[in-house]
Amino acid sequence: MIGSDLVMYDEEFKLIDAELQRLLAQSNAKVVFLVDKNGQLIAATGETENLDTTSLASLTAGNIAATGGMAKLLGEKEFSILFHEGQRDNIHISIIGQRVILVVIFDQRSSLGLVRLRVKKSAEILGNIFNQLLEKVETGKGPSTGADSPFAEITDEDIDKLFG
Amino acid sequence: MSFINYSSREINCKIVYYGPGLCGKTTNLHYIYKKTNPDSKGKMISLATETERTLFFDFLPLALGEIRGFKTRFHLYTVPGQVFYDASRKLILKGVDGLVFVADSQVERMEANVESVENLRINLAEQGYNLDAIPYVVQYNKRDLPNAVPVAEMKKALNPHGVPDFEAIASEGNGVFDTLKAIAKQVIMELKKGQEGG
Image (cartoon, rainbow over all chains, first blue to last red; front, side, top):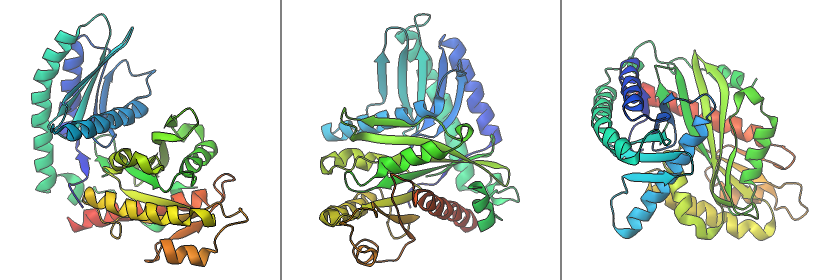
């Protein structure tokens, strides 16, 4: 099977969360979130209480996938930035390190220029965190190989219980 | 490709329902949505045409409870079944952890079923997956229709390797949860294997 499963550890999660919060503050945005290319929400910050972030994550990934398909047909590697303008809110979507998607939702309190500038800076930092994470997963230094792994002792009964 | 978050103690997996047009993929998801406790499901998203044919995908996030202290979430997707949406179908398969093939039992749809399984195999291979190696179950849907092909015949044509298979009437819910449970089980067991292997 290609690639490896995405694994997130506490240390990197805190770094990512801190960076998203910094981006949120510096870009004057409403919501900032990070999604993996398969549509799984990794982290979110800002005014997320009334927002269906799970669905947004899935649709964002679908959007990126569809745009990526278009890029391929045109002979482009990818379209790394998408921007949707609304009457009130706008969405800025960018791909980081070809693997994760950074989404910034902002209104008139910010501007596209400011968001682009701040996203560029954060993208580099987030990219480094993900490289660190991937390295950790590949070298098996994370807790997944230890006794903490939730899979080590999974039984059929555990799974049956999920369905009540 | 599953997502294991040790920080928030969550496991997320992606399951895709595949099959020919009008075989009942969306109906499966609708039934699951209808019958699931409101606390454990998110909103169901359908990107469909005005005539309710799936255009891009349906999406249903499902939280099933905890395994060993980890919240277990399944993200269920359907693909658009119509032949000409092949480019979109390929996109949905990215990062899939488990597959459900929904077959239409009507005799006149057998050719479409066979074509769709072939298409699944090809599209998976393009993403680097092998249908024989990935968690996979088959559902024979619309068993209530008078022109349904005998199950033995469907098995022979669509499930030569004998993966777990189920008869279903998705519109009434028969077999829907049996199918979901079987694929969920396989996906989790595969995760376990992956972890043990490395």
